[in-house]
Length: 410
Image 1 (cartoon, one colour):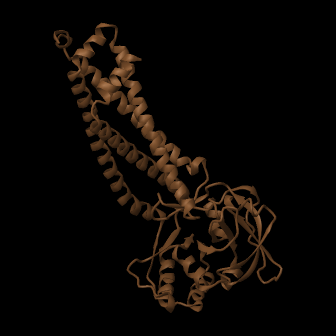
Image 2 (tube, rainbow, N blue to C red):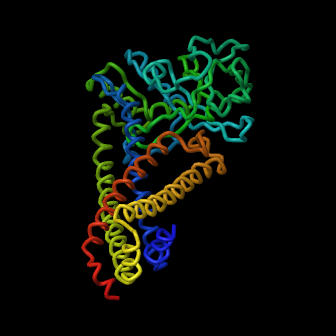
């Protein structure tokens, strides 16, 4: 223990500024590894979700960013003309839109988002997996005054609205009161990735998923119909057929739409994603190199300054194997503290979303930390182990080259 205390106080913690610099660089290295790993995991999840769209004859709509949109000039008749064209020309399409905020009491006092999807999207996506209850039913009749529309709700709403319960609410797109019947509760942290940015996603722990049939769509407001067109997925179609739809949208809405298959969306995403990943990798490599050099240099300088005491310890029984254990013990503790700090930072960032009542990103888990966070922490731990082994072995190699005679003479 005295030997360990000697190395801690006289070698490792000899200069406060060096200790602080090492800790800061180590945290930056871990944080960059964590960010890269979490982004990679999130991207792989996005690829897995979107692979169902990557098939021949499937195209996804996207509003041209150069298109000037004036919502005030678009009315219900304009959007209905587009949907009528889709029906009359036998288009098969998957529709999904969300983000309609509703005031709905719940145990967490969170804002609640309504999401709308048609049957084709529900069959295609497979993202809205339930933990209990039954799948959505699209065969309700909206014209019946006593209709109870079956819905799925997020985990965060499950305690307040158990399966079989009804919710009376003013629907934001039909603009009338509806009775919703809870048919199923989603699994924790069900998410939906962005078509064009696969690493970006939002969660549905505080959402109500409402099935949209033809009658519902025709009676809905321009907001639902227009938002549904922005990312509408056309199935089993062709470029020639899409040209006609493009012209109809242009004539009725005055908007320029582009239609891409998912492979093209993948290529667009990869172009800037891998560029960002390379930048992170380069920064991580630079910081790691500086950190490694700083640790080795500062430790060797301290040993040379304390060569007399170091030599005495060698003469009274300190072996290089014990020295190796001391080094691994110290850097293991240092890496552990850094990982704990990183975990706290991650948990705080997740918890902040709960404080802000941000329903789209609030997640359930230990301290709010979810699976991809834990995997990323493991990646940072693995990186630390590799760096730790390299640093310790280089230091031991250099220490063995320091002549003991210098200490004996002193």
